[in-house]
Image (cartoon, rainbow, N blue to C red; front, side):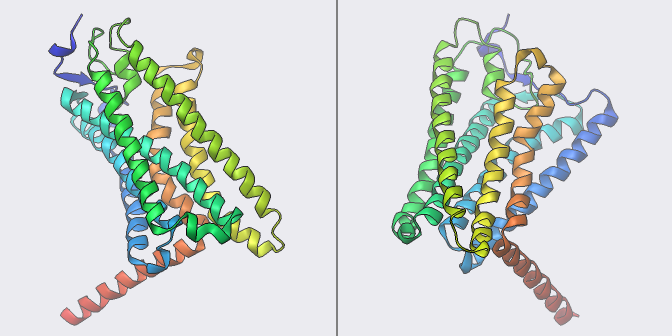
Length: 318
């Protein structure tokens, strides 16, 4: 039996035992990570540079891309480094930082997705009040509230989790550090407060989910009453990407944490954790770009503009 004061590192769960599969895991994660960096980086740069996209919807999308970059950068590089070196260890401080940052980004992202559903509701159901309800100051305040909620939640739960005595060793049954896995290492009688905090958090998360569902019920009812098919198509093109991102985010997370214990296994847990922690940040830019013609045009304009400038520079230097 070990105590948390004597633990200097944790052992993460490896995706594979053989060297060939470890390298395969490294290259797979590297490809996904680079795709996430490229996709989210393009969205951030495009929205920041194109003044036509300086609207509430794209302002929130920019924040979402920043949070996606943060969440995937918190867990994937360490996992790649371990696979490349054939190791499993992460330092105590590194594990604590990983829990804090990942919880911060995930909670802030969920809060932001809730705000984005309100943005779409106001834009479609109350268009005459859109400028009043979602002015620049209101948007900044709502985004700051999402980031602040994520930070407070992560700080509270991380401090409470790592203050518990750890009596069940240091092997984490996950490829990154997260609160449920750390709680499994604590003494069985000592995590009642953290369990209570998680229960309260679950109710708040469920409240946000209900808000999103009600918002989209009202949105679809309003869109189906539009007289023209062109208006319906335009409304759906701005709403469906957000709904797809919300569905991917919630469905993978719910399955990961609420799946029956009878179907749980280390290999299945690894696959599920990969689906909810790594896949969404890489897919979100693609989801938004496929349905949003204005964003696609802006991204293409940015790429062609940079390419033309690079060609001109090379020709002038030659």
